[in-house]
Length: 424
Image (cartoon, rainbow, N blue to C red; front, side):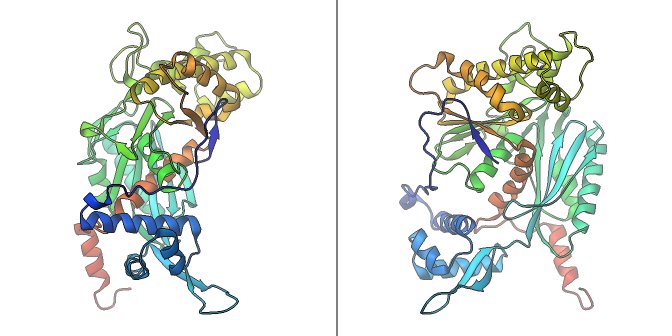
């Protein structure tokens, strides 16, 4: 995710990532071990190639602890050894790096289509493609499962750690069922089980905004930031919340549905069934409505077409997008009043013209600050890639701890089959 600052960033404070060990003495032995693994993985990611001695120096951990964790991470294929470092004298250390053979199969669900990709542990894309999907959840999930299976088959030499799915809706954090996806028109649907049965890999789902926030955290793009909100602008508005360094899910994962807070009871009907929700005024769908209601030469059905008209200087397209931007900024007043974040990150279609539209968003956001400086406002210029990297980061975050999830029944059977005489 490439973050672009807004127009009035006053107090920049991004720097080296700080690992908060203030409460380490209260943690269990297992939690401390997980924290140490996370620290070493983070240092390896940011400094690779790196030696064991460097890991010990940078982490402050004992060399024996580093060696033990490195051995475990190598057994689990998270990291791998590379070449020996060239030093003027002394023993030449073997350098460590993240294992680029470890990859994730990912999908970004959208209304009517899904973007699929294979992403390696460093967030690099090996492939990317788009498939069309029916609106019916059962038919769409079957096609999605088949397409992911076919994509996986193209990379027989890679180790697939799991499958990550970014969803434009809310996912129960316990069961990972899709509870509510108004723009997909899916409710209480178990996509996870369908994909696991077809692919034989563990599947991780989450809201698209949550996935993007996890991506920014995993890949070190929010170093030092502990309180933030991410707003995903597409057909609707998604949001994710970071408080004191922790992602907030709330009961059944429904925290942060700012897009479905009604701000005008006489407004348009929302996909959730309520009138005048924030997303009916500030989403990409709202921008298209503004434009098409202005009696243009020709109506526009895709946000990309509207953005292209604006780039060409079309006055009605620019007016529609400015109206959307101001509505987005007014809604951010709710966010700042409720959570007082250090940073607000915007991803999605609107960021393509952020240099033009960002000032309108920020002007509205700061118009009624209760006190103090406004939060830093950033735009991520690669929303589509951020959602896909976010889906990959979900797998990495949830699978990288020392207490890794037990293999599924299908995974166990695959391992047993591979160990039989004559198997490859």
